[in-house]
Image (cartoon, rainbow, N blue to C red; front, side, top):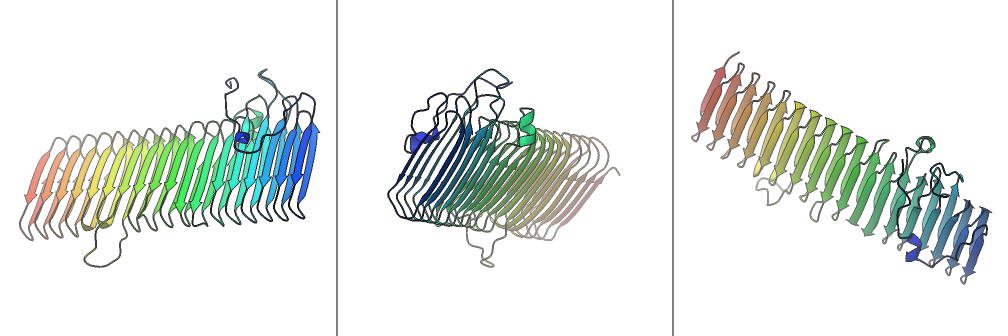
Length: 457
């Protein structure tokens, strides 16, 4: 059951105040000081209030309000030219919880030219304020917000030009059973323009924040019909792309691309319950992909590729994490250039820690049992590593320094321990542990050495 009315600060406080609402009365105030502007207001029901102020040229404002008892409110301020604002607000007049009638409020302010803002708000079942505030300070921006059912909140601010923001919260089919409300979305796009943000939340208590600064960033967040999922996307660099898709309950995703992360790409897909993903990208041409299903899995990816590649000017650092099961944990840190990391965990309580520095490192870690642990450190150049754990409670420690070393560790039994250290050049090590309770330690510090350890079959 929903909580009682939440105390909120109306978005209208940021703009011109609307006339006071009196029970059973509609009110409309239109002020046009520019030229050839158009304002159309339609109010049906009770206690609807509308305020329109247009001081530019060829602006157009359309307001359709259908409220009951506590009514709806809308304030539009347009000071640029050729702006379009279209606001539609309605409620069904129902009150299944006895709190009073629903209420919508919307504020649109456009200071640039040729901006378009479309707001549609529909509430039902209980009284809880639904708010939308759109501010566009540049030119040729497009903002589209659709909120269904009550206690939704959306703020879109675009202060450069040619940006697009689309926010859709709630689902009319779920709203019938009171299973689509309480979502929150903030989209702020600032900087040289052409940002794109798309947020769609369906269910209860979905929360999404997208902030983009720089130019030509893109963020897409989709949260399906579960509860209490959260996504935070922050991009302060150039040409960054973040895609987040969360389906289930209690997920958390944070993707941050900061200055210097040119052409960074992050993709997060989470299904199930209580998955957590954190991606930090601060290098050039870095990419990360995280896919999690099950319950309670945790993934952290940090990519801060820096320094000069002495072989070329290119950098293509990539991390891929795939987890399915319960309570698996993966941490990948890439601070060099041209690093490739692949982590695949299936089962429960598996742990992978992978750190790559230097140049041209590749690591593959696969865990398919329970309680396995893999620690990998690659700090030299041109290393290649494969770790495969398919039993339970196996532990693998690998450290590769120097140049051109290769390691292959396979553990298919239980409670095995493998330690591999390579600090020379062109060394190769193969470890196979196929039975239970085995222990292996290899240390290679010379050149072109070969070590093979087989324990069990």
